[in-house]
Image (tube, rainbow, N blue to C red):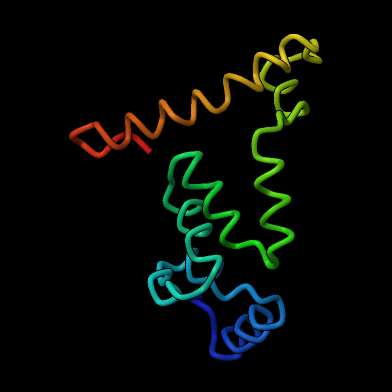
Length: 125
């Protein structure tokens, strides 16, 4: 919004308000800390600044609009995104590959957390 005219800024502000995108805009323009009290703050922090898979999932759960949505996210967390796995593999995964991925995902998440927590430089994010 740095080069926007006052009229353009007003239009952006109104649109952001209608969309409920205040935290998203704050993440984009570097004012995210002003929204620490909002449920979606941590999610936008992970999206804009990086974080571990586990931090991302906790942030998604915290940002969920209802308890039911949070529960659904918790139940979906261990499931394999077969479409994403197909992109990674460059082909449709076999059932065995989906099963392997189901068990590999939490292990990768835990390894990533371990590296971040125990790397003296703070870990690569």
